[in-house]
Length: 534
Image 1 (cartoon, rainbow, N blue to C red):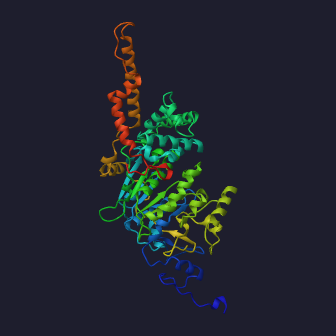
Image 2: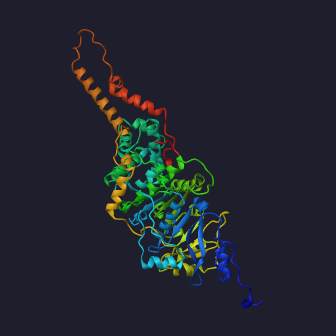
């Protein structure tokens, strides 16, 4: 039988209205005909045609198998995040989004109808209705519009802090020893001045004996760390560390109507601090990992976390840092959290992490330079075998189109599908700044986190220790000046300076405070972050 005499293709179950589609298109469409709940991404593109009855979808239960949204600048990645986030919210799944350019806040407002949006909706057979999502807005350290997000230095840990201080591997290990010393001595590191006080003490004449007890930490390395820390503070980084510390369980909230809350971290004010905000995102993810219980595979995720500008996280990362990321991504799936990395090309993500990203939405790539061409070829190799010429497709698809492969309900990769994506139903752009301010101040979380708190911690305790020693030394000097002349009556033996310091009320108070802390030394896990809930 010739091709022209071949029987008409039969639509697979779940692919409605698909009779008459080319056989290759039917085979692709059948891979997305899921029985359970799923998110609609768009419809199949085949041979230059949009096939609205061949829907491309992601099963809801596999969203915790992680994913990648990639593509060149201006190809529609942000709108894809918005599209997925909206549908997750409707399904009762909380979402975290990092808003680096300030254009994601529109997810909290209904979309605006226009000819372009309506044309896209008709093309993909989408019933488009303007819809807002319940949202909370956050800002790192209160820099920008949002509820302030802070972390204590203790909980942030030495590995993550080394990343933002741009320390090398040896210095990172030394900083870990300093944290260990502070943990053992009950010196809480709430903010940067606490850490600076501890390092300053260890590099002082008095602290050098303590330094000798910390294996492998040299005075020279401690001095480098102190200079890096001082420079870091001089760049205005202090507001990001301190109390009240943000409780990452806030990201798991749902609205009264059952929809998942979309947590938007507003980052325009810190765009020029990429090492800081990317590492803070990793702290939030690591903190969730520490606190959430094992739940296995759920019907839907507890949270989907979109990690924007992911390449910044891996640039210049130490071996320990990369290993911790890999382990976190591998294990957090069983705690019900899905992670989507957002970047330009898959090569921005280390292979050990990329191998764990089962859901892929790849927007257009450019091939203007030899490096671009290498990146294109490398991207094609990361996809399963395909009926498409992917090099041609990835350089030819337009804005709002992507190449998709996801995991099926059984965990197997679906066929590669060129896809015309649906239009988000929320506002595709920023909300009015005044409306954003009102939303932030009306949040029940605002009163909890808005005002910074400076409790007694390492800085105050070490300052009290120095003050007690100085007071005792002054008293000893004064008593020595009033001592009776030689040959007179026998004077009562004066206590030594050390005895006077130990006997002082200030020192006793400090010792009691530190003794209380020593009994509960902090346990650290991935990235050296504190596992004890603050």
